[in-house]
Image (cartoon, rainbow over all chains, first blue to last red; front, side, top):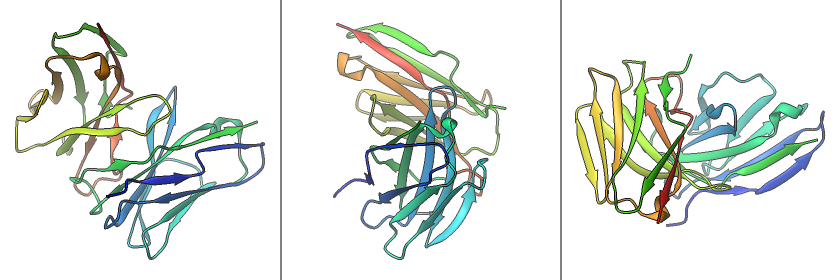
Length: 114
Length: 113
């Protein structure tokens, strides 16, 4: 079974621009979550989508948004990029929503903001 | 305030010996715990999990122990191999929690040949 895929793998943007990242979950998984990993903060939860609905959102500004499509694929958008948005963005999928379910991660998208 | 803490940023172990990675949590609502292994420039790889109704779960060389009263879990790797060298993250979740998974900041394990 194919794993979680993320595109693109690397991205370089400048301050003020916006960016869209894409994630395809494992086949049959309906929950997709996004995380930001930075050296100082570790992995921080951004949001979770299940059946095209955002279930939960972490403590991030409104510049971070996402959506999920009917085939469970998800996109994450960051508008008005800031230098501090440079990070590894990880997508993870699981079968069910909420806690108590193992998440499987993609390879991540490395975003660099100049 | 960190809900999941991995107090040792790094650990060095000799090949063949036991590696013990520790994790503490503060939220008593957490009921599912996982360990992930991460290599640079890759996503975390799921290793092993444990539900709060158990105190031990074993999978090959990996064993996770959960002490609910102490809000502490540990991952034992026996025997350790050089290929185990990576960053290990402890994560926790709560049914109905506001975050899907809450992660510790990781422990970098180095297994020396």
